[in-house]
Structures are given as structure tokens and as C-alpha cells.
Length: 391
Image (cartoon, rainbow, N blue to C red; front, top):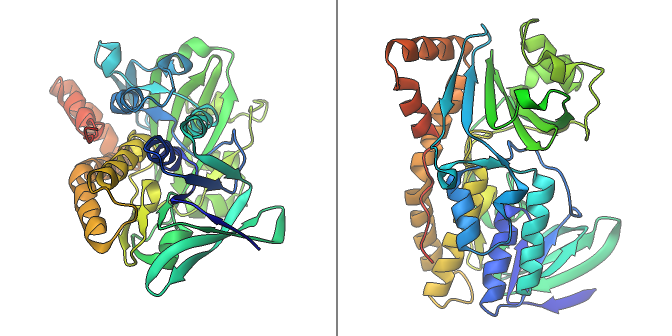
């Protein structure tokens, strides 16, 4: 079995992991960045990058220019009754969100990590976390294409960036996991009438689910959302059929769900979309991104949290001049993480509950007509700027 020595092993090369790898490699660490996938790849995601995310990308010099993305100037909230309201974002482009497909976004971040000096190992998955007593000291990985293979990557610091239900967290910490009967879905759809979707993100509420439509490339929109697991089961896993069973016949989403529509990619799904928060219980590891904690999906802060969380973890390591994560540093990180993200997580959960209840949303939209600016204030709270850590 091959045995390698590194300063840091980052498990998971999504936005959080790739950002962490880039920041640590720039500071002279030898970093192995591993992922079971090959890039570019697709992920279930709203593909919405807030104004704070773009500021972080620029601050951290991660080479994801805004020119690659589709500008978003407003948010449309729509109840299943057909009633809707449009909320404008700030007129200043620097304070506006923009959308970019995960295939492009993740690839650019992985390439930034490689340019910084990190070594990318694709097509390998975690088999086990290596321990010495009660401390993590490395990982054992296998080639996805050859399960009989084996390789040990030893390092004083293991960073878990392997998403929800993280394997690293399962072996070294604990989850606080809310029960969920919700699944996520996504596909990219080419549209002829692109002007009808350009420059705006639309959120459509239906009983138990919500669906977002967001332009991610010229002529292409991302159709994504969450739905009850039972609807997916009743449709025998056919996502389009499940959505048609939940939406009214006159839904404006009908053209995007029609059988004649040819998607650029197949449907992607995410089982058991649930709120999660993790706790460290073993020295030698740090959890970032969804492995540390999740936010209501498709409500605009997931990728911002991934970037800001990686920045926070890297900054604390640098400040403490630490080569590993001892119990004290882990506790400090967990406290800073809660302080930075708890408000956004609560606001996004509130927003998600409204979007899954069209009658509640309908009442909100009606109120906005009686109290101008009311909906804008609530949406701004749900999409409020994620706090960042100064470097």
C-alpha cells in the first residue's frame, strides 16, 4: 500500500475544500485535495452566488471572474395561485448576486487550488480515517475504479469538506441532524425564450415544495428545488412526473417540465435534505462547508458559507500558527462558526418554510400590496449578507 506524508489532507474538492486547499497551499503547506469525482461535474445546487460570495472570491483571489456568471437583478416570488411579486436587488452591480453553474464554478476553484500548489487526487474515495490513539493522523483512500487498491495519506491535519453526512465526521465527531422527508433536485434546461428568464431568479411555491429557476448560461436555466420524498416515491423516481403531480396544471413551469424539452444534463437528486450541524470529538480534524453545518438549500447562502467557512478555518490556523487542530482550536472555530452563520441559517430556514407553504406565501404577497416595502424587507433579511472574516 502506498504511503504518503502531507501537511494537510482535504477530503472533498467542492467550494469549501478547494478554497481551503488554496489558502493553506499559499501559506507553504503541502496539501492533498481528494475527491471521488472528476471535474467538471454537476451538483444539486441553486447555483446562486450572493454579493458577499463575489466579494470573497475577489478578496481571496480565487480567479472566478464575475464575467463568467449571469447577472441577477431581481427575485420573483410566486405562489401556486399565480400571484407573484418581484423584488429588485440593489442597483449597484457590486451588491447584486449572479449565477454560475457548479460545473464551471467548482472547476475554477479546483484549478485555483492547484495553481496555489495543492495536489489534486480525483477518482479516490475515503475508506477510513487513520488514528493514533485518540487523534486523527491521516486517511486511507481507494481508487473508485479499483476498490482493491489502497493508499494511506498521512497528515497532522485532516479537513472534512465531504459534504452532508460526511464520512470524516461520522468517524471523528457527531452530527446534530434534523429529521427530513425532503429531497432536492436539479437539471439544466435550454430555453428558446431566454429573455423571459434573463437577469432574475424565480422561486415558485407549491404544497410541500419549492422550485427555483435561475439563468446559469446564455440560453440555459437551472431548474432546481425541493419536494416531499413521498412524491418522488409515488412517481417511481421520475422527478419530472413528481413535479407535475405537485404543481397546478396552469403552472408557468410547464414548458420546462414538458417531455419535449431536452435537458443539457440528466436530472440530479439529493436524498434527505436536512439541517445538520457537526461537533468535533477528536483532535487532528476540522470540518468545513456542509460537513460542518448546512443551510436551507436554494435560498442563497450555501456557496457563500462554503467560501467564508474555509476562510475562517484557514485564518484561525494561520493566527494560531497551528499545524494541526487541537481541542482548543476546534472549540474556538466552532464558536466563531456559530457566531458567523447562525443568523443566516435561521433566516434561510424561515424563508424555506414560507416557500413550501403557498398559502402562507400568498398571504405574504397580499400583505406586500397593502404595505409597500414589506416583502422587500423580509426577503433582504432572508438573503442578508453573510458575515466574513477579514484576512
